Image (cartoon, rainbow, N blue to C red; front, side, top):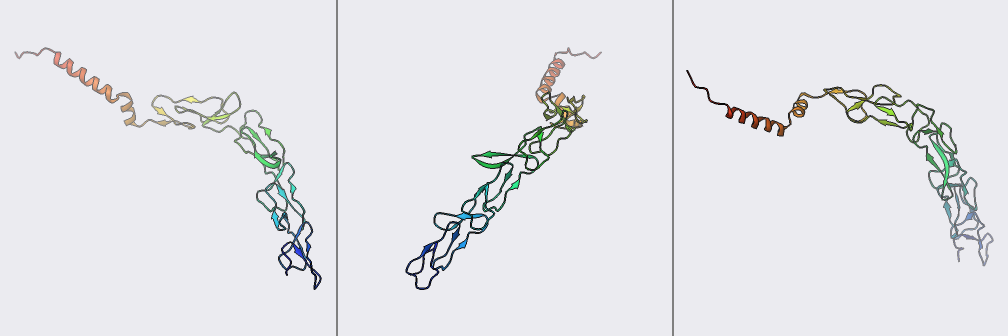
Length: 219
């Protein structure tokens, strides 16, 4: 009878099979066991199982997978090594597994494998996951808390690192986050100055005024 998977017999005429040692495996009828490949470990059923995300195995026949250190990570199963967290992120643990998380807004990290993020210097700004801070761009302004937010509709800002936005002058308009004002189209001006219901009122008043005037007699 052939030896079952996970066991072997290396002597001709053997009446029994021996189990493979930890970190090795065999197929049915094997005369020897082979080590599990890199990035795997031996599972209870005798097969080689890939290391889960956040773990790695860099030796053949690994009995278990090793946790990645904080500040490093793996992005897929079966990893043979862990990689440094990229710039713009910091290393931490979630459910005892090393992960990389992006820096929050107004923080940055320009070094790989960092364990925290640095706060942006005054009058500079960054989006989430930034590796560098920069000026608050035109079309936005810096709040007292240091956030860089878009100008509201009806306001604009053509300069960077500004602490406020300018109201649009008469006859001009802007949408949110605009760095310059635009001319209001003529048809919008007419509709704005004389809405339809106002036009009806003007028409009725004008008609009544005309009808109330006394008729002039011809001489």
